[in-house]
Length: 333
Ligand code: NDP
Ligand code: GDP
Image: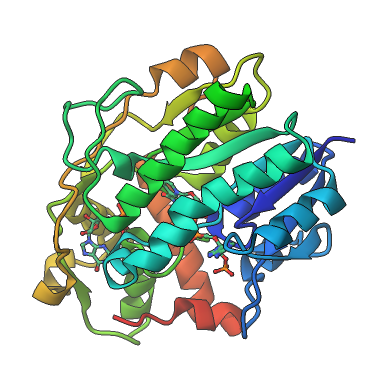
C-alpha cells in the first residue's frame, strides 16, 4: 500500500487530493492544525472524514512535522498547507511569510532528517508571475510577485528547487493557476460570487459587492488539478510544471455566467466597492501547460462555464436545502 502525507488536508485541494489518493488505495495521513471550530467540513462533504489518519501539527512547529513523518512513514508528501488568501497577506504579511514561505523549508528539513527518499510536492502558484513578464506564462517565464503571498510562494518555489539540486531530493513545484470548486473558501472571488448569486436568488441578499472586476484569471476545476499533483510524483524525474487551462476570463465575465445561469442580470446587483481593491493587483494570468500535457499526459476536463454552474448549483443547494455548512457560507465582506 502506498502511503501519503498531506499538509493542508482540510483545505479545498487537500480534500480533493485525499479523495483521489484514497480511491487509488493509498493510506492517507493529514496534518491538522488546532482550531477552535471543526475544520473538516470539506472531508465530511466528500464522505471521507473517517478514512484519514489525522495528525496534530503545524507548519510552524518543526518538531510536529518530524513526528508526523516518523509516525506516518509516507513515500509521498504533498505540501498544500499555507495562508492561501492574497488579500489577507497584506494584513498579515509576517504570518504569511512564515507559513507560506518558511513552512516549506520546515517540511523539507523534516523530510531530509527523516527519510530523504520521500517524494515531495510543493504547492507553488501562478501568483509568482504577478506583474506578468510574458503574455502567456510557462515554466521559463521570469517571476515578479505582487503581494506578500506571492513573495512567500516564490521562496517556497526556489527552496524546493534548491533542495532538489542540493540534496538530490525528488521535489517538484506545481505552478498551479487558480482552481476553484464548490469547496473553495468563501473569501475567494468565484465562490463569493456563486454564493451571493444563490442568496440573491432566494431573496436573502440584495447585492454583490466586488473590487476590481476587470482582473483576469486562468481558472480551472480543483478536481482536475489535484490529479496533476499526483502525476508529478509518479514520473521518473522530479521537475516543475505549470498547470492551467490556457484560457483567461475577467471577474465581470464570470459574474455574467453565474447570474445568467439563474436568469438574473448581474448589472442590477453588482456594486463596486473601492475598499475591495488591492494595494497592488495581478491584472491578468494566462498559463501555458504544454509541458505537463506532453510529459505527464495531464489535461483539464471541466469547462469554465460548467465549473461556475457547478458552484452555483452547490450554493443553491446549501442555501435552500442544507444549512449544515452555513458557517462556511457566511461572508465577512
Ligand atoms: P485552502 O486555503 O483551502 O487550504 C489551506 C490549508 O492550509 C488548510 O487546510 C489550512 O488549515 C492549512 N493551514 C493554514 N495554516 C497552516 C499552518 N500554519 N500549518 C499547517 N497547515 C496550515 O487552500 P487551497 O486548498 O485552495 O490551496 C492549496 C495550496 O495550493 C495552498 O498552498 C495554496 O496557497 C496553493 N495554491 C492554491 C491555488 C488555488 O487556486 N486554489 C492556486 C495556486 C496555489 P485550516 O483548514 O485549519 O485553516
Ligand atoms: P487570487 O487570484 O488568488 O487573488 O484569487 P481571488 O479569488 O482572491 O481574486 C481573484 C481576483 O478577483 C483578484 O484580481 C481580485 O482583486 C479580484 N476581486 C475583485 N473583487 C473581489 C472580491 O470581492 N474578493 C476577492 N477575493 N477578489 C476580488
